[in-house]
Image 1 (spheres, rainbow, N blue to C red):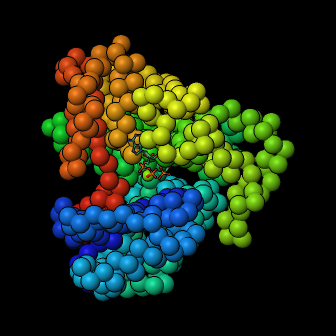
Image 2: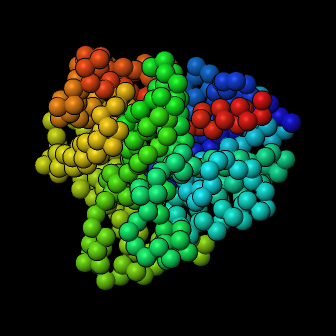
Image 3: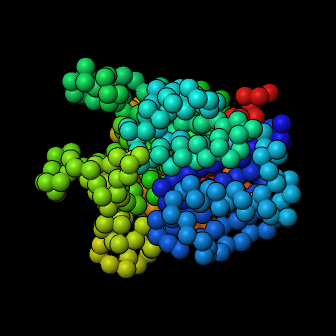
Length: 414
Ligand SMILES: Nc1ncnc2c1ncn2[C@@H]1O[C@H](COP(=O)(O)OP(=O)(O)O)[C@@H](O)[C@H]1O
Ligand SMILES: CC(=O)OP(=O)(O)O
Ligand SMILES: [Mg+2]
């Protein structure tokens, strides 16, 4: 069996891949990311040891599967990365799968488990299809390597019944699996472990309000190490707005938006069925619809380029504040920290400052300089609070979903 782990995080517009050593904790030996798959030309960011590069790709990569295949062969053929040159060098491939239905933990892929996961594809076609295409590709091209799927939803299996249940006909709900699942759980698991360690507390005594704010954004109330509420729902559409997602809206809105809502969208394929309503709310909304950009670094700037940019920023802040208040109360005010993670949470000092200013009534204050500076490259958790002790601390956590999967893979084999 090979000695390395390949961890794959496939999104709709980007694919992130990291190779790790099989040791505790795993060490990254190479990291590659292709983004801009939906807005060509795609770009590759590649890091091997201290060497970092970024290039625009001439290749046509239409899907996350194409991007994964490209990255895999590029790494296998890189003479400077001779440790991983073929499937013989790999012990496991870990895949992030967003929707895991009722699965509580990761599963090894075989005919039966793959079949079960394929049955879930219809519940979350926009999110699961690409990941499963990559799983299928790995089984075909790298048949000697075991694939393990990790689910974003698994962390939220602890949601109480009254949180996970939608008030609709329960027979229909049960028959169709219609409940709140919640996502970004691989990230929340990384955040919980890292923050508990940073605070010097056991995980089962740690209470936090965690925020994973990237192109998909969500929040989670963690009480004594368990998810007790989260903003996403049956699918990642619910809760906060994102780059192209509306987040919470009145569900009847979509029938006023278009009479085609229930019809299949032009983006559907033979294998992947998406309704026009899903397409509009997942792909044509969010801050892209408001401002024309999916890049939040163009929105969260001191002098907003337009009223529309300011509105997009204010909407995100408003929705986040709503959930902070909600979760603060649900945690009985016993909150160790507000934790910001994800591309935006980790990089936008303006967002953090604005939230902190508006949460002063909870005893929250941040250190302006620490906030502006943000975390160093290898600093997993950074405390940016001003007055430790008065209210919850404010922390930045540089989350890492690929690491989390590799870490659990090593741990489960020890
Ligand atoms: N300095 C910054 N300020 C605000 N947003 C930023 C900054 N740098 C990066 N981002 C945003 O982070 C987002 C990507 O976050 P990430 O968690 O990597 O996303 P995902 O995994 O969902 O693709 C993009 O919207 C990007 O514009
Ligand atoms: C669950 C989800 O929204 O994932 P991402 O942020 O990677 O799109
Ligand atoms: Mg992500």
